[in-house]
Length: 189
Image (cartoon, rainbow, N blue to C red; front, side, top):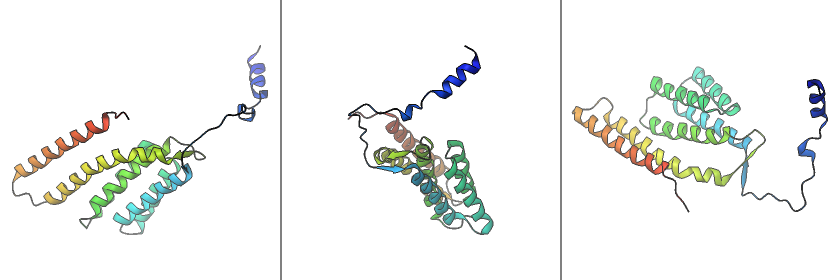
């Protein structure tokens, strides 16, 4: 059989989705959210981060572009670039102490939710249990991130003793190691 004939035969086959389901087959799933809603939440997280750091129309256009990009294609690399752009905006124009911890939460949520959303098509659904299962890891990482933010704010330009920096970084490294071990250790129920 020639390649053309095999291709035509394959095109004439009925779509497997059109085939009738066997009787008594059911699919049970918990409460779910449409992937479109998750993508809109990604956009909302970008806009909230923009409200935290943007200072002017040009920066808002950048925030909107980042939000549209991660909403349309929540790939890990694009999410990281989007978070880096938002953090860069804080570095350039940050003025208030509260911007760093708020941005740490928002960009981390963007990365975490984006990883889940990237695995689902636009028309797909995600069980809320999947998102709930991610919450302990999110909170563990946030504990370290917020400790790092607090340390950065405390030591910002006012470190009288260099050893205080070394001690703070060492304590944060130890805390991070414990958290990473807890995240990596599987729990069996």
